[in-house]
Length: 217
Figure (tube, one colour):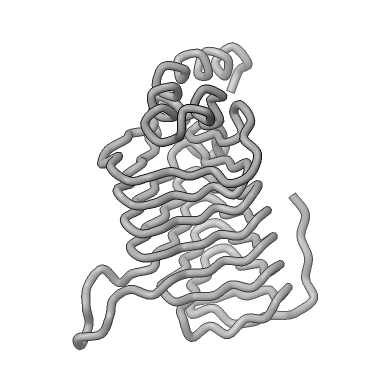
């Protein structure tokens, strides 16, 4: 995206960002404008709450600005549907075209990065640890949305710190992903997927490929 377009997007986002911060944050935080939200981000059902833990600084949380090169930043549209609770534990970046539906409690650790077309469907609780990156066209959900055989359709999802989740991966209800794990592109994690820290998992359903892996941003 050309520099002039990036600058114009920030300027155009100021009125909506001010309104967003005043709607969700205490005045002492809102006046510092810690959350910037781009205009193409659709905001509906804003009856929930947003909390920032720790030090607050201007523009520390960006929603709808970054983008993956495979997506059309002029036409793609992000979605924020949040009658539930969102907790930011530090700086975070939610890319252009990401879609978040939060009826439960979503916790994002410091320096979490959600790429374009990342979809988060939180009905009960989803936590994503610090320094975790979730790639484009991924899906994380803590509910089947329908009760099957009378069973509870919801179960919390826990994603640890410094986890890398590849493009088109799916993380389903009840999954626990330990620290340092790499989830290969196109994988599907179910609650029966047993993973230890710093393992590489791949496949549908996902299985452990090898241990002792590491990754860098």
